[in-house]
Image 1 (cartoon, rainbow, N blue to C red):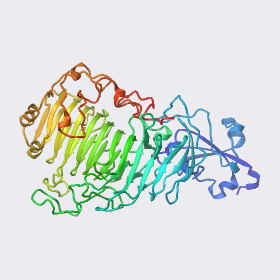
Image 2 (tube, rainbow, N blue to C red):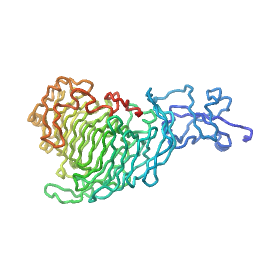
Image 3 (cartoon, one colour):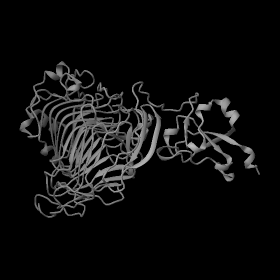
Image 4 (cartoon, rainbow, N blue to C red):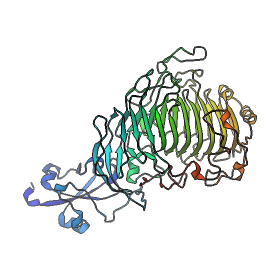
Length: 575
């Protein structure tokens, strides 16, 4: 047995590239001092289980080398890089080490200094100070963990060098019920705030509560993953945390108790509501107030979301359930969501300035009775993943809900540019289940000659089309497809509209900005379709300049570069 008193101080160097290790330590080598007495006699031949606290806690170190102080000094730990056990310091060694993939994203620009502490908030339990994350590509950060529930009106202020961590399910208020009125809890989030999470963690604004997450053009609010904070996310990353959920009290069609409203029996279920999928806690949404408000959500980026909560049940960047038209959603960017980019379940949803980049499934999914109007939209798929750009569905019997259930799903799009790039996608726009689609002033750039611009499934869906006007697409072999109705029947509906050409020659510049051919198309006045729409005066999302609608509130990637001054989606902005 070793005599502890004769050992003196040991230097412990440890590293791991094992997937089970929190990825913030996978790229660097750390040096820490400890005495054998501190390690414990029984630990001499075992892995060191923890040398960090808070967000940098190490839970599984695969290989540990214990060397004498003199040997380690020769290996590169200088005297100024070693902290005694009494300081609880953890020091990054700057000597070269093998670099795994991916390497941290370097900004080459300004960095931040960790905030001194966490601000005081009003909700029970307050914020939990988890210490600091040091040495990220954008600097050092104080990490403040959110409470499980915001139970009174509250605010998350912007503090330079501070991140808010979402752990598990974080709630704004509790469900207030189908027939409730007003708002119980309101949470406001200041411009420039960055929130991060990992794994199954997600954020929910429960029915009858509101959020005011309003960034600005130059200081958007960022919702992202832990890997993004650490510089380990790439343009191929996704599924690193759950996402954001907004719930409300507007009508839905898929009633969880199995009794549905139809034209023949419109009041068969006066309290029809749905349940949020994939959660362990019953989470209802829906109501009878189509003008209900769940707050405002403007100038937000949601990155690397879509972690699978249960098998085949993932969240999107933004999931809405039964929100009403009083909810304001403008200037929203979804980046690399592993499921849909955004999904609207029921409710009355209005969105302006939407960017969906790199979604792994559908970019925009609308179903279960949603009444949705979306204006000024740009969608760009990754080449390796992604299904339809639009998937529009009414109940269609998938969950035992009849296709005649009310409300019928309606989606109207005005001024959009869709860049279909996924080799896994066969069509850009797909409507089915009796849902009603309206497309105006839209540019669709399909990937190959065999890809379909517009697909319509079932006669009931063909009959429900609101209209197709001033829509161009570079389709070649099969610009439209009917599944149930014939291709010719679908084409006839397109031809009945105005200024449509689904076999056009596109001249887009900067990936999605109109060229001469797009700007030569006569636009359609979409105000006739919805009072939410504007008569913008051109087709597509942008007629000449990216920054008109999409600029510094977005982020840049190899998938689509907006020229944002706030930099790459794989890095954090520094304000």
